[in-house]
Length: 486
Image (tube, rainbow, N blue to C red; front, side, top):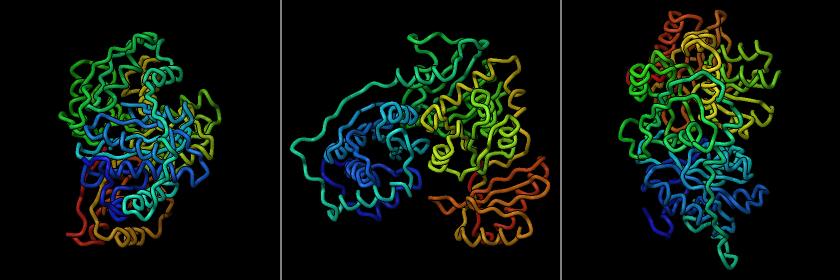
């Protein structure tokens, strides 16, 4: 970790950590306090370049060992550029979004989400929790920060004194806001096992679901790994990897719980386990929450990304809503939410977005909707979720490919007779309702394949067929199965 001095880095270095939707890298070789300080200044300069006065920003951080120091350095850089800073302290990413929305301030959250312990990063937003992506400010922040670090961009001239720093506790306000959106008081008693993965849900869940200052809820919470520990001693805080759900699944079955919830490291994603210990598809959760929001807002728009199940737009339309398809990625979903006034949006990665939460994603609010739906009727979760799951899906299959563009071209050529769609990568649809999407990773030499079909046999047939085309395109040494996510 560096001190107050600048890091000796340039645009090439920062280009490796500024991703499509956030900033993320290893500490301290890619991201240190010098870089964080430059990013803080660059953030304020970018906002002002775009006409945002950026008089004050809000900063939060997760439980990783490097997070407080990086956040403090970022705040120093922002204050040196003349912006005041509200220090929200320890929190989840959705708590930071709450702060940016409720206070109407641009925000910065220091977290690497589900990445291993050696990583850290920054998620940035404009006032009102509006997204910042590569094309909407991140690239400019990268270039400005690189220039500040190598001296080609002059540091802001001090205005006599640095702008102020104010510490503000927001956990209670965040919890009260969520509780105002979903009323859980009248549901039947539920035993809920929650795996926080040693991440920020261990801090936010007790405040939202168990704070004695709020009305008591008919929930018995069984906590797993609520101790905040950025080394992740029990398992990685990524609930989309099956290995990270094993402890939760076992605990749900052993305790006879009605439901299990798993959060990622910064608690903006939530994954659901039914009473049998089986995962509930995030597409089914998207459809379930969509129906609840449409019951309150008839005819509203619901956003879904293009790899969610075909059941999602079908169910939205059946309940009187307008389904709108989006590219994969939170900045695209949030832009669509704002452009359409959508009441809700869901991704198959277990990110869920709410108009009542400034269009931002919050795993906690999605979990509360699941608890409310489950507790309002007598059926077990497996039976309830079955109403929203109509098709067989492969999950995401990542293949390591040397030449992504050529491999994707060969796949498109092989299916030239089907319906081709290029909104995000390549989507191919067939007359029998089967489809697949093949997308390049933004950060690795991977092609991501998702396949869905009316039945498991057709899904497996199409999945294997597409993988065979990929392997043939690149040669047996050029394509390697990387992992298979649910």
